[in-house]
Length: 147
Image (cartoon, rainbow, N blue to C red):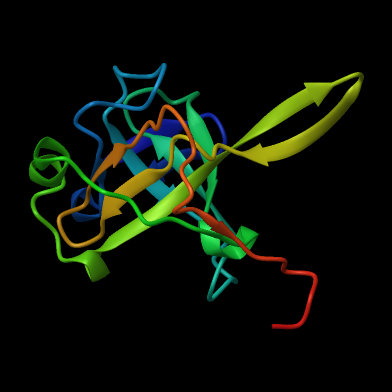
């Protein structure tokens, strides 16, 4: 299928590569179908663009939390597990949405720690898990130091 996007122009999307978020994303509940885009010359890209197939102007930059020193241990409800089609743990990829934060005239790119994306890579279905508070089961590592 051919999709017009704001960032990438008209692109051909293999329907088997579409990731569905049945509940959409926070603030963008009407967009349910997405594709992942990354630079072709990157074997292991540092980040991906999550491009909406329902809204051409909607795209998010996402990263693997491990690349930023975060590790999530998440408990899923029965409803969340069902929505993800009961995946094996190794079939779930956790990603963080990046956003631009303005503070006193300075801007920086920050990960959304309280609302990671969970994607069942086999079933190509995902959800955004919104957490009211950060719990102690998120570990941060200092990437500047030798491990």
